[in-house]
Image 1 (tube, one colour):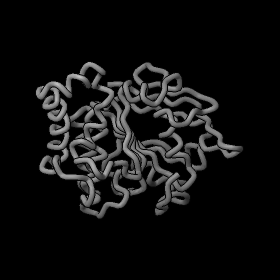
Image 2 (cartoon, one colour; image 1 turned 90 degrees about the vertical axis):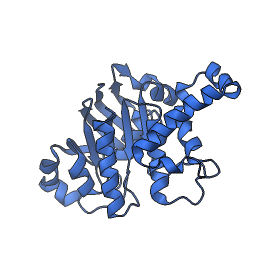
Image 3 (cartoon, helix red, strand yellow; image 1 turned 180 degrees about the vertical axis):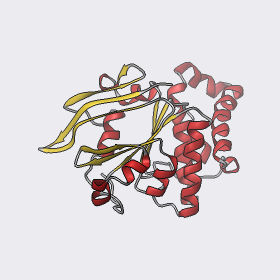
Image 4 (cartoon, helix red, strand yellow; image 1 turned 180 degrees about the horizontal axis):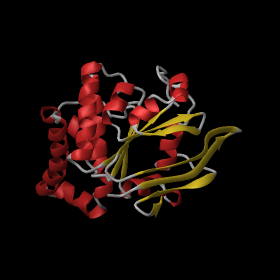
Length: 253
């Protein structure tokens, strides 16, 4: 499994330092969570990893690839997928078609042409999506349009779209946002299964501390762009500075 290495990352916006020499590694097969209050730099860090932001200093390496030399679509091709806090589904498309948008980097131009000419090609692509839908327990939704679907189904569709490309690492931005307790428990189970059954490394930004504590191998707490504490979930949870600064906050960076 591939490792992610963040080294001395600095990101500044018009004089505001969003990330201040941040360094950590995520081992292949790990569930690693980032916590922090509004302005702590979590979302900025995600944006640097998938190429939306270009830091002024530092390196990001994944699977021995320098991600800072890559464009966002090339980073996806290297095996990194992402879900977003705000749902990115297209309402007038079916659940299955929304999911298949995530497989675009696995389909070359010849395959795209073949898709229009060959039923077998279409069926092969759809089989990828159906496999992920079945994994997430929503296989009976594949032909339903996104418009009007429950929030939980829309969140799972976004996760499915990230998974269908068969990434090595998935970045999950507040997967439990807007979920009730039962839905949050189900998301926790799914995140663990993504790692355990699909063999995908998971990097999570999340404010629900019960979720973070239940799924994480390690946790990193950010404060104003700096690492405040990092280690086992209980160690970070009980760190006095973390208790003072973060627990109970609900706003994101």
